[in-house]
Image 1: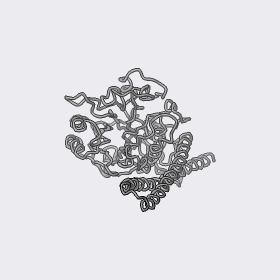
Image 2: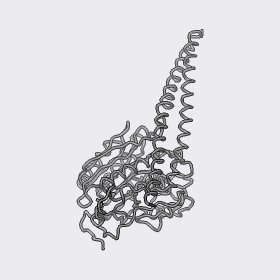
Image 3: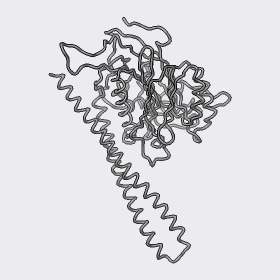
Image 4: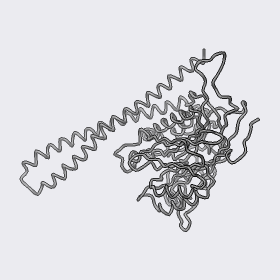
Length: 475
C-alpha cells in the first residue's frame, strides 16, 4: 500500500503563463502587468514559470509583489533582447542554465524575431525537502509554421527544438532529478512536436492526466462552446473569452476548437540506472519504494480574469496550472512510463496512454519508430528546402555584385550629374541586399544545413541503437 505524506510540501502547485510583454508592441502592457503582479501576489503557487517578460521593470514589479511567498527567482538573458523567461520559486534555487535552440528560424526574418531574441530552454534546479533536486524547465518555442496540417517542414524549428529539449530532460533525469517542464510550446497536443516531447522525454502531460475522459480531441472535431473548450480541453490561446482574440475570426483548428491549447505543464521522475556489468545479479538501481513520485491531482486553465477597472484580459494567453501530489509508491504500484502510440498521425493522441510515472531506465528508448520516421521525413524536406534557399540567396548576392560593378563603370561615363544621386541610392541598396544575401545564403545556410544533418545522424543512430537493444534482448 502506498505511503502518503502530510504537510504543505507534499504538493507542488505550478503555474505557466505567457504574459505578452514585448515593449512598444504588446497592447496595454503596463496596466496588464500591474494586474498580473497583484494576481500572482495573492496566488498559492509554489512555482511560477513566466514567458514573454521582456521588460526588466515588469519582472521587478512581479518579483517584488510575490517575494513574500516566492523568495527565490531568476530571470534569464538570451539573444539581443532577452529571453523573456522567468522562474519564481518557494524553494531555494541551487543552479540555473540557459540554452538557446540551435534552429530559431531565419536571422533575416526580423518580423518574427525568434532568432533575434534567442528562444530556448531555461531551467532552475530547486532544493525540495521531499523530492531533493527538482529541475524546472521553462520554454517558449518558435511560432512559425502554424500548428496543424501535414507540412511539417514549415515547423522544423519546433521539431528540432523538441529534440534538443528532450535530450536535456533525459540528462536531467539521469542525474536523479525530478523534472517539471513548462511553457508556451506553440503546438497543439496532437502535433508531432508534442509527440516527440512526451515520448522521448518520457513526460506526462498534467492536463491529460487530470482530464482523462476529455483529452482525446482530434483535429476534425468541433467544440460547441468556448467554456467547454477551456474547462475540458485546456484552451489557452485564441479563445473567444480573451478580449485580445474575441474580435478575431479564426479558421481551422482555432475556429473549430474555440481556441487552442498551446501552454503545458509536463513532468517525470528520475531515471533509474543499472550497472552495465553485474556481479551475482547485483544492481545499482534504487529500490522503487524509496523514490517519491509525482501524481497530478488537478489541472485547470488560470489567469482568466480582467484587469481591474478595464475590460481587458491579463494577456493574449490564459495560463495553465497543475497540482502535483508527492507520495512514496510500493514496489508493485509504480506505473510504467508513457507508452508510445502504435501509429503517429493527428488522431493517434486519442489512443496514447498517459501514466503517472516514478522512475524509468536511464537509457529507455520509448519514442516510436513512426515518430522518428516522421521527424526524418520533415528534416529531410527542410534540408532540401534550405539548400535551395541558400543557392537562391547566393545567386542574388552574385547578381548584386554584377549590378554594383555595372554602376561603378557606368557612373564614370554617364553625362547627367543629376542621375548620380539615384545611382548612389541604387548602389547602397545593392550593397545592403548583397551583404544580407551573402550572410543568409552562406553563413546561415551552411549553419542550418549542418545542424539538420546533425539531427538526422542522431536519429539514425537512435534507430541503430534500438535494433541493437532488440537483438540483445532476443538472445
